[in-house]
Amino acid sequence: MNALALPTAAAEGGGFQSPTLEDLHLPEIFPWGAEYGSGFGKQMLLVIVAAAVIAWFFVATARKRALVPGKFQFAGEMAYSFARNSMGRDIIGERDFRKFTPIITALFWFILLSNIMGAIPFLQLPTTSHVALPYALAGIVYLYWIYLGFKTHGIGYFKVALMPSGVPWPFYFLVIPIEFVSTFFVRPLTHSLRLFATMLSGHMVIALTGAAMSYMFTGLGQWWGYPIGSLIFIGGIAMALFEVFIQVLQAYVFALLTSVYIQSSIGEAH
Amino acid sequence: MQISGSLNAIGYGLSAIGGGIGVGLVFAAFIQGVARQPEAQRVLQPLAFMGLAFTEALAILGLVFAFVWK
Image 1 (cartoon, chains in turn yellow, orange):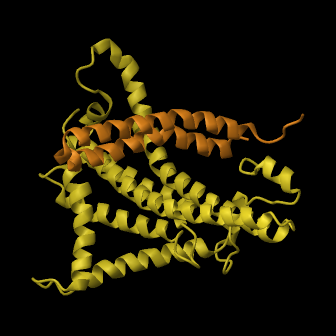
Image 2 (image 1 turned 30 degrees about the vertical axis):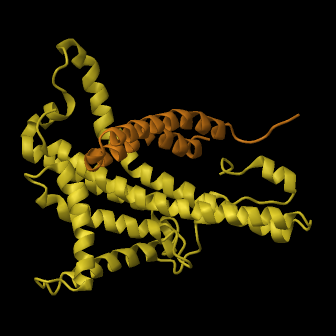
Image 3 (image 1 turned 180 degrees about the vertical axis):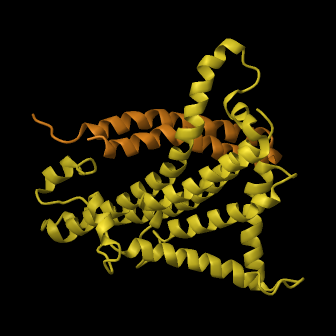
């Protein structure tokens, strides 16, 4: 994994070790399933915590169902209506967005919590920075919109998905393979990898600033390490805040694309 | 002078150029649209983020393949 190693940094300092991808593999807590790779570690624990917190939040806020909501219920309703209005209704359309609100809401808030764990002190690990979780989520969404497409259009779904209208017929020999690859292969791939890659790179940037700062303060042993280390520290804080923005944005983009894909399979032929 | 390292990083840098220009174009159009017609912001915002997501795809594939293809 020397793609991320910065040769110049190592050459200048002589002893600087930049963090690698192996640093993301934290030691396991107990070796359950260790023969398939790594055991039960912090990642899995945080995924379970995130799922439990989201489930608890929405069940607890919806329990009372008061006509005039209290503060707690209001928070739950805000969380729900944000996903419903800005992603469900605006994209899928007024007619049939209600059925799909639960999956979009759950996806958005679960991914948001999973991402934002990278910014919470002591957790500091976006669980989506391991590729397994985005693959699983995007896989669920992939199977779901294919199912919806065939349920809505029957076998004619291939025509809806692969044959855009208004194309002169000889071009279909060119368009159909392109549309097939881009719809059924590239779409789920980018859907998952977008989330994974942004979270991974953001986490690596934070780790790199941390490692560089600690090296400048303690490892270098020169007086000018302190001012440079302070500058890196300030830049690291700025990057961490920017990372929070990216984490929220990627959760939004994931849920938005989910509703776009659902719309493209239940909507009319395009 | 001898330079050592991985060419993958250069490849990823090249693939990021297109994505960067594309994202810039998307948001330039979004800002222009909102500046001309501020009440259109609610309609344009999901479209802008959708455009961002689609434009990013190649740069993201580049980042992943920089790690995958040794």
